[in-house]
Image (tube, rainbow, N blue to C red; front, top):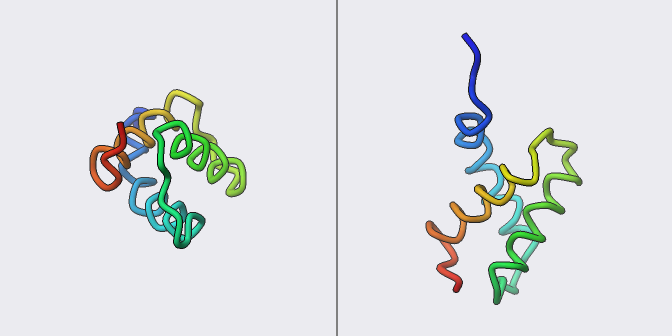
Length: 70
Protein backbone atom coordinates (compact mmCIF):
# COMPACT_ATOMS: atom_id res chain seq x y z
CA UNK A 1 0.00 0.00 0.00
CA UNK A 2 1.45 3.34 -1.02
CA UNK A 3 1.02 6.37 1.22
CA UNK A 4 0.25 9.58 -0.63
CA UNK A 5 2.57 12.53 0.06
CA UNK A 6 -0.28 14.66 1.38
CA UNK A 7 -1.13 11.96 3.91
CA UNK A 8 2.48 12.01 5.09
CA UNK A 9 2.06 15.66 6.03
CA UNK A 10 -0.21 14.68 8.90
CA UNK A 11 2.74 12.86 10.45
CA UNK A 12 4.96 15.93 10.08
CA UNK A 13 2.50 18.56 11.29
CA UNK A 14 2.90 18.21 15.08
CA UNK A 15 6.68 18.05 14.75
CA UNK A 16 6.64 20.99 12.36
CA UNK A 17 4.60 23.07 14.76
CA UNK A 18 6.94 22.35 17.66
CA UNK A 19 10.09 22.97 15.61
CA UNK A 20 8.86 26.15 13.95
CA UNK A 21 7.46 27.48 17.21
CA UNK A 22 10.84 26.87 18.89
CA UNK A 23 12.66 28.49 15.98
CA UNK A 24 10.49 31.58 16.23
CA UNK A 25 11.05 31.77 20.02
CA UNK A 26 9.42 34.99 21.16
CA UNK A 27 8.70 36.42 17.71
CA UNK A 28 5.62 35.17 15.92
CA UNK A 29 5.57 35.57 12.15
CA UNK A 30 3.87 38.75 11.02
CA UNK A 31 3.10 37.56 7.48
CA UNK A 32 2.29 34.30 5.76
CA UNK A 33 5.44 34.72 3.65
CA UNK A 34 7.57 34.68 6.81
CA UNK A 35 5.80 31.57 8.04
CA UNK A 36 6.32 29.85 4.69
CA UNK A 37 10.01 30.79 4.78
CA UNK A 38 10.34 29.28 8.28
CA UNK A 39 8.69 26.04 7.11
CA UNK A 40 11.10 25.79 4.16
CA UNK A 41 14.03 26.48 6.47
CA UNK A 42 12.79 23.79 8.89
CA UNK A 43 12.55 21.30 6.02
CA UNK A 44 16.08 22.06 4.87
CA UNK A 45 17.55 21.93 8.38
CA UNK A 46 16.04 18.52 9.06
CA UNK A 47 16.73 17.04 5.63
CA UNK A 48 13.10 16.13 5.01
CA UNK A 49 11.99 15.08 1.58
CA UNK A 50 9.05 17.44 1.31
CA UNK A 51 8.35 19.27 -1.90
CA UNK A 52 7.82 23.02 -2.02
CA UNK A 53 4.11 22.36 -2.58
CA UNK A 54 3.95 20.18 0.53
CA UNK A 55 5.70 22.91 2.52
CA UNK A 56 3.16 25.40 1.21
CA UNK A 57 0.35 23.13 2.40
CA UNK A 58 2.03 22.70 5.77
CA UNK A 59 2.44 26.47 6.15
CA UNK A 60 -1.24 26.85 5.23
CA UNK A 61 -2.24 24.32 7.88
CA UNK A 62 -0.11 26.07 10.51
CA UNK A 63 -1.65 29.38 9.52
CA UNK A 64 -5.23 28.11 9.69
CA UNK A 65 -4.67 26.21 12.93
CA UNK A 66 -2.35 28.43 14.94
CA UNK A 67 -1.20 31.75 13.49
CA UNK A 68 -4.24 33.14 11.58
CA UNK A 69 -2.14 35.44 9.39
CA UNK A 70 -3.51 37.29 6.39
